[in-house]
Amino acid sequence: MRVLITGAAGFLGSHLCDRYIAEGHTVVGMDNLITGNMDNLAHLFGHERFSFIKHDVSNYIHVSGELDAVLHFASPASPIDYLEHPIPTLKVGSLGTHNTLGLAKHKGARYLLASTSEVYGDPQVNPQPETYWGHVNPIGPRGVYDEAKRFAEAMTLAYQRFHGLETRIVRIFNTYGPRMRLNDGRVVPNFIHQALTGQPLTVYGDGSQTRSFQYYTDLIEGIYRLLVSDEKLPVNIGNPSEMSILDFAHAVIEVSGSNSEIVFVQPKDERVTDDPKVRRPDITKAREILGWEPKVKLADGLAQTVDYFRDRV
Image (cartoon, rainbow, N blue to C red; front, side, top):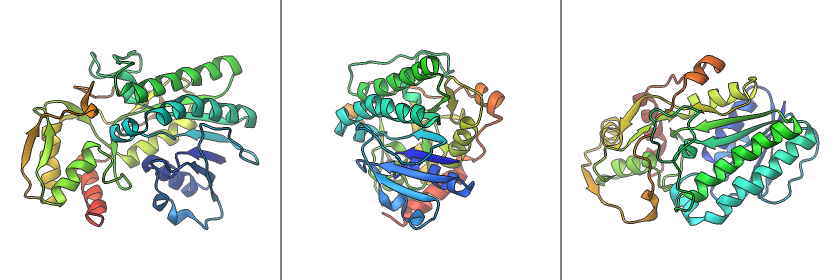
């Protein structure tokens, strides 16, 4: 196949590029580098089956030649990023989705949208199945990301129903691993950076809020299977092993061998407004339809991630 991957210079986009190249496909990467990093793709430059276009998908997209698939992963994805870039976040989720869908329709390509567990908001149902409609504050500070992704899903399904476009939607739960930005504001790089530099690990509130962490290789495998599947409705890809943020902080300290303490703070910024109290995927659908479930244990994935960051602090 010849595939277009938007957000190619980001954490997940760059790993997707690697996977499709490794499987023998040709990859066109696209990114405007608002949060992406070209270092994530440096090893692919010069590869005969990889090319890169610097472009903002919120504007009209032109890609010459045939395309068999379009994977839309462009978007700021951490609270720090989408609070700093609220309007570009809304635009890439709306205009960018429209433009990439239009390109896929023009090329006769299959389309895969990177959605998020954030469409469930601060859920009142745990774990969250794909049938849950969510509990989202549309006008809160996180709404610029949550509602952009909810709109993107609606637009994708509209193209499927009205134009007959072959579309797939992955709802991604918390994912971690090498190539995350050290300063992106999410809990994994935050805790690892603090642990490796001997700073106290700052836990918001009492640390009882929960998350479910999956290693990036598990996610990439799920996405790869989803694109070639026949499933047309959203599919959760995440790790159903739920743990509190406080327990996760202890795990980071243990894996990193750090002597850091844990301190509890009451943040006063917008990053934690409407912050979900629980987050756990119901992956019954992924198991049944894709034959997929996460394989990497937290200790193993954290060890790889800590090693990556250890060379960068």
